[in-house]
Amino acid sequence: MDKITVSTPNKSYPIYIERDFDSLYEAVKVTAPSKICIVSDTNVAPLYLEEIKKILSPIAPVCTHVFPAGESNKHIDTIKGFYECFIENKLDRKSALVALGGGVVGDMTGFAAATYMRGIKFIQIPTTLLAQVDSSVGGKTGVDFNGNKNMVGAFYQPELVYINSATLNTLEYRQVAAGLAEAIKYGFIIDKPFLDFFITNREKIMSLDSFSIDYVIAQSCRCKAFVVDQDEKEQGLRAILNFGHTFGHAVETLYDFTLLHGECVAIGMVAALYYAYKLKAISKEALEKYERVLLDMKLPVRCDLSPESIYEQMFLDKKTTSGKLKIITIKAAGSYFIDTTAKEEDVLDAIRYITS
Ligand SMILES: NC(=O)c1ccc[n+]([C@@H]2O[C@H](COP(=O)([O-])OP(=O)(O)OC[C@H]3O[C@@H](n4cnc5c(N)ncnc54)[C@H](O)[C@@H]3O)[C@@H](O)[C@H]2O)c1
Ligand SMILES: [Zn+2]
Image (cartoon, rainbow, N blue to C red; front, side):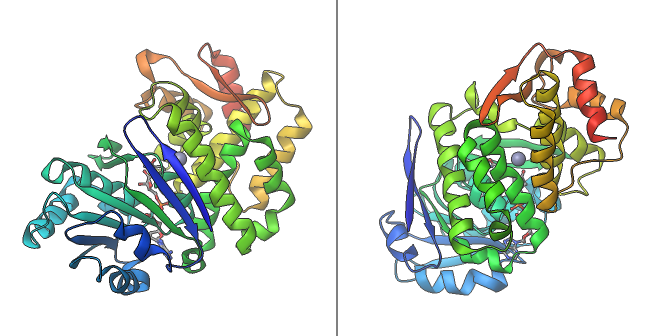
């Protein structure tokens, strides 16, 4: 239905966007794996694992590894279980891992692929909207370590990403909304028409109307590929994908990860938009309009934390280098702006807005 190519300096690979698994066999066959291990979690495996196993078995011998779902299992000890399974099933350097699940499965399977035998092939089959519009594309893999998010990992690109958007039909709406937050982010920073698409088609998108949601997925992948193609390892441009995240990560940490990542990004984007309003980049009406879109998608746009605690937490973020805040904001809708000389008062005002 749609095929998008990611082209980093070292590797090009396709993203397939489909409404079923009918083309999966052909897509995986060309990677010519000697063996396949499908890695999934305890929520996704009962839904899709048998179907995928049946499709891939004619290509090569298939084994499976299922681990307990949830971010709390995204750590190095869980990866040990992966390696044990790979060794037991004699996976070799020509074998491929298939990540079947959300961002947790994708990040961990990618990391296992990057490190097992110094690197074997891996294929992403993302099943959450967040994974389809964001985490499965771009090659960031890894695990949390002692409570520090994504502290251990590698940049490691997959052979291909295969998205079946019909898998979203089994996902609870709260998780869908969290993915929508990451998708609309691309609209704010680089794609005004995409932002407008969310405003015009919000209800269809929320009800997973197939044309609308497939467009959201495809356009998000195009936006992410556009950024990653230019800056695979976040030396510059890729930082714009942190729009809403500088504030959002602080909120996420202070709530002890009880809110979903995408929900915290929504709150953080409102702060970043208020910051843009303070810089006179967008009008008050625009700020309220964009905030309303997020709210109508059932995303939170406020939090009950103290402004000072958020401000302090922002300096503890691993991406805050040499004690200086870098605020990703916009100079107009669809046009990012990186402010490296942010004033404390402006940042605090933005935080006060989301805590009001
Ligand atoms: N690599 C990157 O660039 C990148 C970017 C953003 C986020 N991430 C990471 O992604 C992770 C979050 O990903 P996520 O939001 O997909 O979380 P997740 O993988 O935990 O999935 C959310 C929940 O939905 C369940 N699920 C998945 N697909 C389903 C389906 N089709 N039907 C029913 N249930 C389903 C999962 O089992 C889980 O309980 C975080 O660890 C984050 O750090 C990585
Ligand atoms: Zn994010």
